[in-house]
Image (cartoon, rainbow, N blue to C red):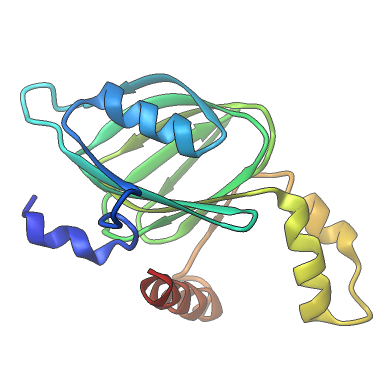
Length: 188
């Protein structure tokens, strides 16, 4: 990984909010500090290769953003109290096992509900932004967007289940994800 490739992911070079880790334990501590997760295991699957990760975190109201860029990682974490949206930047392969379900994605997003559950993950490249938020904060936003006919029951039900938000099957999601990535660059 070339050092000049790191700027493509926002927030990883902010003064006072960024860290470079050369071991998995340090990265696991960073993740557990900024996200409501308990890290059980955090390992570099390529034991013969060097490990390197750049991370940065920022808090925007109820929203925490953790950016990461670096080596492959295998881990097991326990979700505590907030939902997460995993937005990958580079096309590494991400595999998450949540409960009995397996989610494999490259460019699409993964929504993880705010349910106490163990998550097994394997990322061939750590490159992306994880949004962590209380799921109830989405309800007033969805209501404001949808207008007076909004029924929050369908949204509440959807927020209880992990899901891949596939960009390839829905051009609106692809456009929304690209706009979100651009907005993160401006927010930085």
